[in-house]
Image (tube, rainbow, N blue to C red; front, side):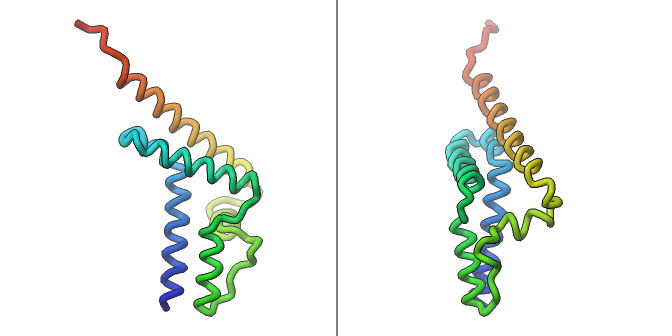
Length: 126
């Protein structure tokens, strides 16, 4: 039972990471210091997608499933392949989903920098 719980925790952390990747730039509008962890998350996300890397959380999930006596997913099948594509959107729309995610991150960063300029700009009113 312990390894099944570990697998669940890993999945929750993985989904949380994806949510932060999508929305973390908007979080930084309020807590400005969080732009740095979001930048790191975005770089990691691009590196995994472009480099076709397997995320360490995916390795951990497969390992914990095997320890629990379950048949783990094929090691070539990543978290997004298994739990996002075909579940949240059809597989044929993967490229569109990636573009929308990138545009959302870009919009959040644009808003972050525009809000920062507004806060730092001195007032011209007397």
